[in-house]
Length: 397
Ligand SMILES: *Cc1c(COP(=O)(O)O)cnc(C)c1O
Image (cartoon, helix red, strand yellow):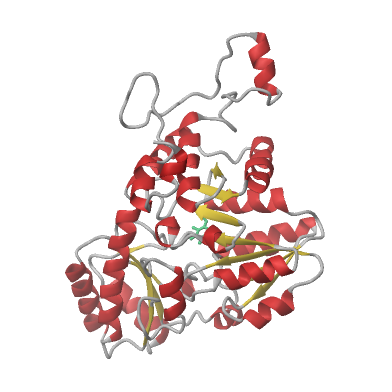
């Protein structure tokens, strides 16, 4: 199928067909090119490839057919010109910053981002003269006020984790562009099956492929998607020089993951909706955060911006940490793990795990209460998930 045709297809078709790679063996499922290097037909061919005068494979730190197939497929799904796969989600964010920022540049970031991303910004990039100001995801005045002449990047995750706040990507893209900056969106929680930030004006999308893109908790990886100049040239240049490369084996796992991504995201969203509605109707639960509920403060925006509300639900118990831990310890089906985005449902206490290393004041400012529980709703039968939560809430008294 021609690329111009696949670009008009839906996310299920794109996940199965975009970037499809077939060797002269005519295999139907993509092959894994497990090779570190590639040979050349002649010295002149080697020279031409090293000089970028002729396309082709050189060395798997920066050119491998299986990795390229994953990149091509994800680029089509996100609607970007170019995609670079990386060893992890964190190295995707690092590569984006190293490739697109200089010392002295400034980042404005939403405060509720993934903890390790925040740590990358304020413990590491700051040592190279890149400062970050953190603002509330949905406080648009705060975003505007935080911008300085040297601001080059606005960075956000939407929906946020674990509170599921939704930011208006179009509005923040306009703010970035009015101020000569770029908007980078971590699209981990929605994936292109539910949300396409580039079509809404974002300049770069980053992924932890470890989560929904794999979807079965097998391997760690990441990706950066955007235009040819920023991603195809600059991020690729950083990858080639620094080497945070995705392996061919992991790329193959992610290719298989993309084949079922749209189907899984529908299943996650349908299950999460049922669980959220059940929790909201239960008197033992003080509050439920899920953008698929009309009670969510950005419900209308979510309906406009996303195909569905996704698989992450959080809820608050009045009894604080003690009550939250009792519920978690009394589940039988849900896995107690901080990982998310997989087919098995997981339950976690953000205040003592994913957000345990920031101070109590920072947690309070970010709205992470001691009674907050986060669910990554998987693909089990929803009746079984609800029965498990019901029993855990009852046992916790
Ligand atoms: C997990 C995660 C990351 C980091 O990805 P790794 O693959 O673990 O390096 C970045 N952003 C978000 C939103 C995540 O959930």
